[in-house]
Image (cartoon, rainbow, N blue to C red; front, side, top):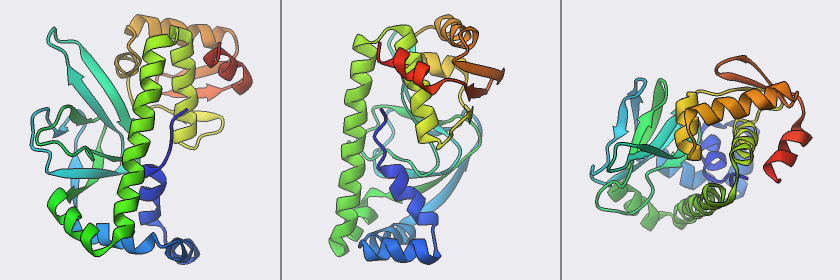
Length: 232
């Protein structure tokens, strides 16, 4: 379900050799190198804020390693997680004077920080960079629409099933998946209670759809059954 664009773009920054030559042939290598020249590396510890709600929106980020959650607190203190970002994903691209959400490290995280002003200068010099950033923004819009549908129309089992399938796809996992986020994070992402998330995942395990050998590890036993639940 998750539309992947920025991860592929970010992953390409780490490639060399024949893969780099292929990227160069597509016209993307110049854009990637332009970003590397203007970026700065930052490290964050578990639960540390990459940026807070209301901070100036004068930069954007790419995840080098670890997981970042984009979240917001409602007036009554409830937390809503809008997205998780993994290695290669980009976030904070929205062009706003102040941040509408906060970004926090789920565990230890390394990110590249790109100044918006320096990015605009790089775009003037290299139109391919503008196209790459446009694709990332369109990806974020498509995923926001998917999440609106999920939260508005899907039952709890459908939400959890689609979440797990998305995580397997985004983390390029076939049978075993390490989830860096807590059950509470998952609940706040899916608009459910932590009790509901735990109950649904336990039901999936009893039915033989998944196995849960440890709190942060999920093993996929029947992908077709999980997909069927997600489409019910």
